[in-house]
Image (tube, rainbow, N blue to C red; front, side, top):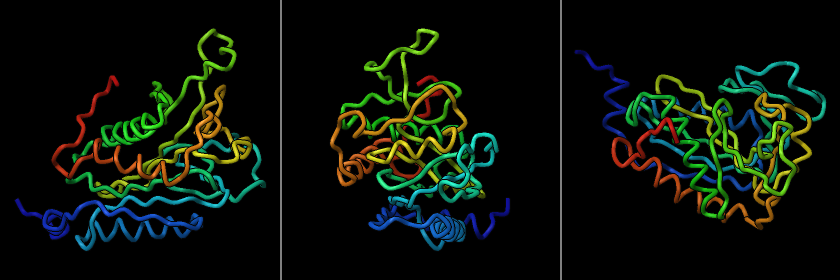
Amino acid sequence: MKVSTEAQNRQVIMPPVEWRRSEAPVPYPEALAAMDERVEAILAGRAGEQVWLLEHPPLYTAGTSAKPGDLLWPDRFPVYQSRRGGEYTYHGPGQRVAYAMLDLDRRGRDVRAHVWRLEEWLIRTLAAFAVRGERRPGRVGVWVVRADRPPQPDGSPAEDKIAAIGVRVRRWVAFHGVAINVEPDLGHFAGIVPCGIRGHGVTSLVDLGLPVTMADLDLALRAAFDEVFGTPGENALTYSPRG
């Protein structure tokens, strides 16, 4: 069987994951262009995987499944088409965005498993601050139960979303990634139906009473990433569709 030059290059060049951190808020078009460039470099074997930690100025992004009716306040902030999966999401100061450009050709050609690992990464990161993050069927992202709030009309506990996930895959290189709320202005989420999910709120680490800094979170993200993703082809946490 003939192996393409692109595939051969990706097999030969596989350095450790590079971690990049931007101090100033990064404009969204600039981030998209940088991710596109990095993905093409990974595909060509000219660069390795990268996790990019950053914040954005206040903005809304629309995923490929976004419904026009879920943009409640279209003139509040700039709105960008993201080309990732999912619906509307808010990004802004106080929210840590982690763009994970990872080679699924080496890590396993399973998008569902990749999304599960992104969720697990977030859950383990939150656990470092004694926050129990949980998955919910049909609701992508990570949720926390709010025992301090009245229950839902059906009697189930109140729940808020604390972290979001959005993924795009190009020739088995995954990009975009996760966003976790540290101390954003939660009122900014009112301009959209976050991720198309009604009936639930949004929270942050500081809203939960935890004075966590970005530096604190970044250390926890790095440690949890190593636990969940390991190195390509080795030590990655096994995908468990039930948990």
